[in-house]
Length: 616
Image (cartoon, rainbow, N blue to C red; front, side, top):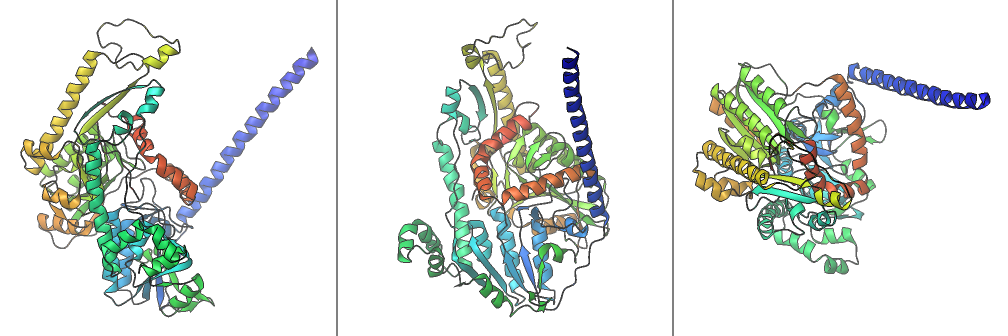
């Protein structure tokens, strides 16, 4: 018996010592990682020296974003200025525009080479801005070259702006048009015995259709076809103009793909060439030889190329954090799902944005504020908190202009409604003025499993919203009244902010989505233009001419930044996997809905959100 106790004791002692060793190892590794990170943070950046006849390699890596993700100071300029190695996880739109503009007047830059192979998600309005910047660059009589093994639809839009467009003889161009396809779960929920109680105001508010239907409604199909067609027309017109084609040529390339491939023996590269989508078919070696006419050589046989990140470290951000000029235009970027509390990657935290708006109001140097919104909405309560802070800023006499990004819909429009001016691009998607709430109950499946719940309370609502019981009629009625009040408030604030009659707002609301041009026609948007035009207009409104742009950003702890750095690096590597991209693209609509309901709860349970991520 003593031997048995000793054996058991030794066994648990071994486990304890192993766990202690493992704990010590993990903490030591974390400490070493922290020390290495601090060394990287503090080491001085190496100065980038440019030879004459250098080509700017415009390598757009990862998703194109409006600003570096919260807590990530290493996107865009940050990583290079801190001397961090490796490629960026995301590319900031303004960094791309700054790099192109800087290269236009740089005598050492002889050409731009578009490197798009690692480009992630990007909005059509962002592509439009980059394309215009490339056209401006070409006025300097410096060429833009694009060469690739393969071009996706988004990559090809940018590549079409090149003077010379080359495709690998074994490559191809994947053009397929725009589409929006969702998973619908009504039948699955019925089989799982989950009862979803759905409340919404707005005939076109389609956010909850995936849980209430097995297919797209006629209303949603109609409005989706309208804005998809508008954006696709913009895409084909732009590309056709750059390639000296007609928009119908691009549609014929796609719609007749089987017969087209049959004519060229199934060779996708020859098909692209025959349609005029590319100038020549060239191997990588042939592309290198072609580029040698624009670039010198260094270190033996290496062409003089400088990456975007390295090149940017030589200049100053046009929209940086600055205290230089007496007069400033403040810039605040709101990108992601609107939530209560603080901002995190992919979210617009009401407390964070409100604090930035207050900081802009208290800064006497800031004479006007531009709020850049790229959001499909989120919490109605959080949207209202931000709107209230906007009203407080305007009471101080500072004009506030809104610049809409890829999306500024639902809660995004709630925030924008009281701006002095609202600007969008022709490819912005906005509107979706509606509100909804969804509540699941599990009473049916619990009963089938023999699980029951019972008790007493002092009032009819003492149990609150009990997911184990059917929704009571009085609670249902209370939710309906509350939701209608939220919708009426939405209509009212839009009417007041846009100087419209509530009945007119009601007619164009109902959750309907509009592309930028249509939004301007119906009065939801004042002007169409890029961010730099909005900033200039805000400066004119405030009466200043000599000014700088002060980008207001929240500050996070070094620890938060380090954790985000690790997570973002992992995400970048996963994004390079075609299997991962395919899985995420299929699952994103459902994940977006779950994220809004479960991770970002609204205090009142009401959401002003357009459940969509970008389509390709």
